[in-house]
Amino acid sequence: MLRSILVFISMLVVTSCATPPAFNAPDRDLGLLWVNHAAEYEALTRQVYQSATDSLAEFIENPSWSAHPGQQDAGALPTAVILDVDETVMNNAKFQIAFERPMSQSKLEKWNEEHFSEPVPGVVEFITAAREAGVDVFFVTNRPCRPIDGSADPCPQRKSAIRDLGELGIETDAAHILLSEERGWDRAKIARRDYIAKTHRIIMLFGDDLGDFVPCVRTKLYGPCTEPATAASRLELVRKHSEYWGKGWYILPGPMHGSWTSQL
Ligand SMILES: [Mg+2]
Image (cartoon, rainbow, N blue to C red; front, side, top):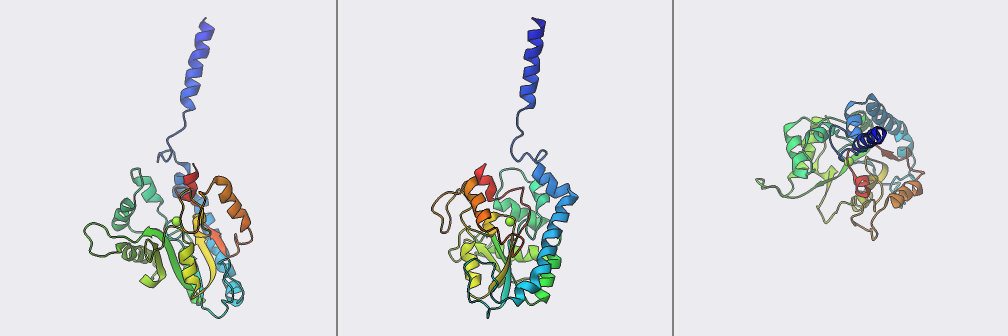
């Protein structure tokens, strides 16, 4: 009898220990802690940007090269690289740790107003090298272009993105920041890449989300997508474009948020 009671108690202990942590609980979120604390994070982001810097000359000198699938006969156009902003250029790990769930764009905007931006390690050096080589640098971000209370500016997010990048030492202007919800653009970034491809030969893409490279990565339907993405369809997209990874397409770690969470 005593033995049965002990077994029962031990089962209760095991069951309570096996309760999974709440998703995104800041004190237990290993992805978030890794970005914020691990030296390996900086090693990885520097590896990405160093590798891209090493390939700049090769892609600039090859007029038939494009990192935008389908772009052809662009050899006479000026060259450009496209970078996402959050977690690709700006490291928002401290915001991710500090803010109370659920996420909202206004919370990020408030945080960015009150705090100095931090760069993803290696990006400032890369952008300097690209510009010195004559490459135009565009930022395609899903920060939405929309009015906010207390501002007469119909798109205050453009100014705040310029300010945030300036805090990193990256000067840019309105013509080089493409937000969602302007000109009819949605969260699928393909329309904005197509727009840049009309005037530039796109030699590199940078992002922390699969959507920074290909459309149809979310369960919600945007752009040309007719089916919700699944874990399998997302993996298929990665494999279908295997020749680009590390050769024109450069992905940064994004364990804190992103379209991958829509499959959870
Ligand atoms: Mg991002």
